[in-house]
Amino acid sequence: MTPSARIQAAIDLLDLIIASARDGGPAADTLIARYFKERRYAGSRDRRAVRDHVYDAIRR
Image 1 (cartoon, helix red, strand yellow):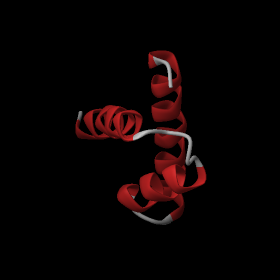
Image 2 (image 1 turned 45 degrees about the vertical axis):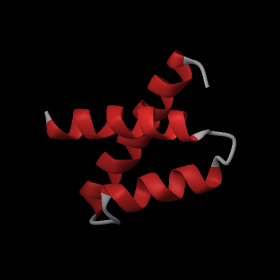
Image 3 (image 1 turned 180 degrees about the vertical axis):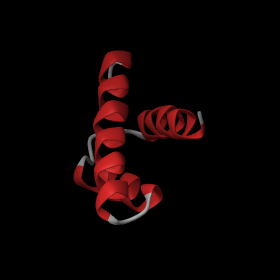
Image 4 (image 1 turned 90 degrees about the vertical axis):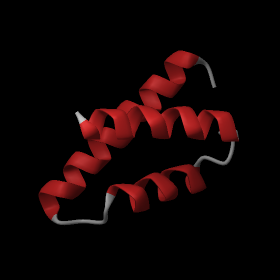
């Protein structure tokens, strides 16, 4: 993944997490795991970078 693709993946995940929080859906870690199971092309470095972006945004 390119750096811009990693940022876009983080944005997509944050949208899912916000919608899930509004609707009382699954937790963020569950959504992140599900997201990457569906996208097997993402390598371990990509997953780590996207995960770090998402958790940094949630913590702020």
